[in-house]
Structures are given as C-alpha cells and as structure tokens.
Image (cartoon, rainbow, N blue to C red; front, side, top):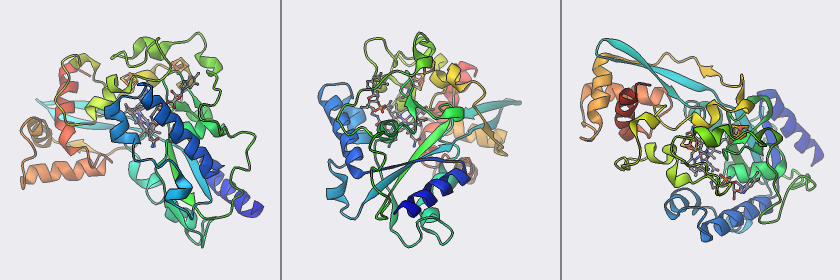
Amino acid sequence: MKELRHATIDWAGKQGYGVAIVDPAVVDAAVAENAARHRRGEIADALFQTYLSSHPDSLRAAKPWVSAVLVFSMPSPAQQVTFRTKGRAFKATIPPTYADDAPPKAGLAERLAAPSGPLQGWRVEPVRIPLKNVATRTGLVTYGRNNVTYSGKLGSYHRLVAVATDADLGGAAQAGQVALSVEPARTLAPECEGCGVCLAVCPTGAINEDRFVVHAERCLTFHNEKTDPWEPWLKPAFHNCLVGCMVCQDGCPRNAGALSFLESPAEFSEEETECLLASAGRGIPAGDPVWNRVVAKIQQIGLGGYESVLGRNLAALLQAGK
Ligand code: B12
Ligand code: SF4
Ligand code: SF4
C-alpha cells in the first residue's frame, strides 16, 4: 500500500504535477458544503443546476469500488490566437484551463493505469467532484480572495483534475491535513490580507465585499461560456478573452511571472474570421466549407464545444478593442 502510494506521488512529480490522495469521504464533505451554500442562497440556482447538482451525496454509494480519489494540479498555459479582419491582425487570448484541455487532462486515467504508470492493473476513472473544495482541504492548493486556487510557483495558472481508483493507496492517510467537517475552518492566504486587487478590478462586481464566495451568476465567464443573449448590464468593455476572463488573475501579485503561453500556430484567415463573426446571431451555417474549416481550427485550439459562442464573443472583443 505504501509502495503504491509513493510510486503514484513519485510519478506525478516526474510529470510536473502536484497530487493529493483522499478518502471518498472528503469528497462527500465538499459536496455537502456546496449543498448547504446552495440552500443558503450563496450559490445561485442556475449555477448549481448547471455545474454542481450531479455530484452524488455519497461517492462510495454511487461507485462502491472507489477506495481513493486522486486530485492533480497541472501547469496550465494560456494561448493567443490570431484573427484577421479588415486588413489587420488581431490577437485574442484564451485563458489557462481552456487551451490545454485535451492533452494532459484527457488520458490521465489511462496513463496512470498503463504498464508504465504507477497504477497498472487497477481501475482508474475520471470522476466529477468539486475540485477546488477538495484540493484546498488537503493543502495541495490554497484559495485566493478571487475564489481561484493557487499552487506554489504556478500561481493560479494550474488546472485541477480528479480520478477515482480501487487501488489501495491508504485513503486519507494524510488525515492530519484533510478536513472532513462540512465547512472546515479556512484562513485567507497571507498575500490576500490587505490586497484586494481582484476585488477592485473584477469588471462585473462578481467578487464582492459582502461575502467570500464569488457571485458566480455575475461572473463574465458564466455568461460568455453560454449561448443566452448578453445580459443588458454586460458592457462590451468587460470582455477581455475569446472565452472566459483573466482579469481577477491577471493583476494578482501571487501570479507575478507565472503565466506561460502555448506556442499556437492557430490563425484564422480574413475569410474564416468573417465567417466566425457572421455565425453570431444567425446560427451555424451547416455544410458551409469555410465554416467547416473554422470548426476544425476551433477544435485545434482546444475550444471544441464552444463553436456557438465564439463568433459572438469575438465580436464583443473587437468592439471592446482588446
Ligand atoms: C462552476 C464553475 C465555474 C463557475 C462558477 C465559479 C465559482 N467560483 O464557483 C464559472 C462559470 C463562473 C467559473 C468561472 C471560472 N472558472 Co470555473 N469551475 C467551476 C466548477 C465546475 C465548479 C466550481 C465549484 O465547485 N463552485 C462552487 C463554489 C461555491 O465553490 P468554490 O468556488 O470552491 O468556493 C469555495 C470558497 O468560496 C470557500 N469559502 C467560503 N468562505 C470562505 C472564506 C475563506 C477565508 C476561504 C479561504 C474560503 C471560503 O467555500 C466555497 C466552497 O463551498 C470547477 C470544476 C470542478 N468540477 O470543480 C471549475 C474550476 C473551479 N474553474 C476553473 C477556472 C480556471 C475558472 C476561471 C478562472 C476561468 C476563466 N479564466 O474565466 C473562472 C474564475 C471565476 C472565479 N473567480 O471563480 C478551474 C480552477 C483552477 C484553479 N486554478 O483553481 C476549475 C477547477 C476547473 C479546472 N478543472 O481546472 N467556473
Ligand atoms: S489579487 Fe490579491 S486578494 Fe486577490 S487573490 Fe491575488 S493576492 Fe489575493
Ligand atoms: S473571471 Fe472575470 S468576471 Fe469572473 S470573477 Fe474573475 S474578474 Fe470577475
């Protein structure tokens, strides 16, 4: 059991990942905390139903084979993509955790269980859990005032990924570090004390003095990831990325020097950019060869699934002049 645990931690370190190994009961405590916050109105119903309601109350009851959950923190770069419009080039940013969705995240379970992986012969599967909540309970990462988590030198530019396994890894052997109570005592990171930059710069007021939990239904990301028409209060000047938002991480002192960029060959020609912009508002033109090229490039830059919002978002970015 100890050897398997050490081999897994060692493997993660060699890949440049941090890892925490937790008992499924820790996941249940995090799910219960979110449910309590939803009941108290701290998590808007639309957000809870979209992202959080599918988490089972008891992971062991839902998946009786699970003996441990592994949460990984992986470096995550941003990406810049060039669009050409009206004779000029325009670079748009894709924040970390979008651009690199495919390679490190997909296939993690397979790599762990592969003959060269530490969990060869064991069952290993991706699992949906409240990642920040679980990872902060273990000490792997810490919350910032912006509600994003920080991981040492990576700052907040890391992604969290979880897998479940039946391997006997000792469960919550780090029990000293793991908080099982529904709402564990949490302290603000020392860097956040007296800082408040994220709170001051958030364009939508989603980070607010009235409570620690972000008003996620105000967050620009919540709106520009979905197809609903823009809310009237969402001003064009708020937009700063092709999808998502970087503002509360960008100016954060804990992120100084931490942002890296993927080398991106992706470039949309004038014709492709116009086609993408035209897709906004009038739906996706089925069978259009230019649109097919646009879709292939969207997939190449790791944004497959966001085809129906990118034209609208790009138009807003161009209007904002960013
Ligand atoms: C729903 C969701 C969203 C929603 C809601 C965001 C939110 N803050 O909840 C929307 C669409 C708005 C969103 C936006 C973003 N997201 Co998001 N999102 C998620 C998702 C699916 C669930 C998060 C969740 O559980 N929310 C519920 C809330 C209540 O939980 P919480 O944020 O952890 O809040 C805790 C604290 O407030 C704490 N708390 C309460 N009081 C106090 C007091 C103190 C002192 C302290 C310290 C803590 C504390 O208690 C709460 C838990 O109950 C996760 C993936 C996953 N499966 O976990 C990704 C995830 C959290 N998102 C991620 C990212 C990167 C983002 C964006 C930065 C993307 C972007 N560039 O635009 C923004 C950041 C917005 C922000 N400032 O939070 C990453 C975060 C990685 C990291 N470095 O931490 C995740 C983990 C995805 C991933 N796989 O990497 N996201
Ligand atoms: S900007 Fe300041 S308050 Fe906000 S997360 Fe960073 S250090 Fe903390
Ligand atoms: S991602 Fe943007 S809109 Fe959302 S909380 Fe951060 S700064 Fe505010």
